[in-house]
Length: 221
Image (cartoon, rainbow, N blue to C red; front, side, top):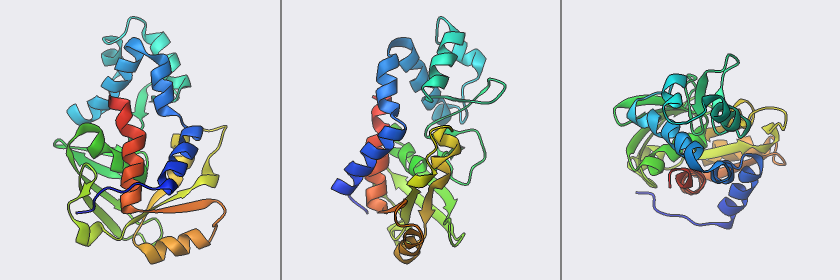
């Protein structure tokens, strides 16, 4: 079992990511029925295995057009070019490499950090299937909250963030999220870091678990 971890490194990274994508702060700001709608959107991925449709969203709010405008501008919900809801951090309907099995469903996460957030967010066991971004080796994580149930297989995993991928002119889902990755072990992680140390950062699995929990769990409270 991999237990709890508290570190200044995680706190610094958490504040840095919140500066790029302040999900919790934005959710608090919109308040009321829009905050509740956002939580319903997130919950739908574990109760339905998918995103809420526009019709389902309309049943939760008094003015759907206003709700879509606010949620889109705040980047709390991701919409396609034709206005269809397609994701909400940590989830996406896009078939990305980070697959999460939860509550009998398979869903996709935006990035490696997001995949680790699902279990603590909903208090459900998850299985994450992904790949090391460098070696392409298979990654499998059995998770229960901040506990890893298969530490012999997953314990050496690291998570990497290429901070330089953040683009103020693009959604985080299309920029930084693409560069928040799993790395098979410490050696691979350090090699990946050394290739661009000024723009990259690596985290052990316990650090990544803490990071994910602290970023996302407040969204459901």
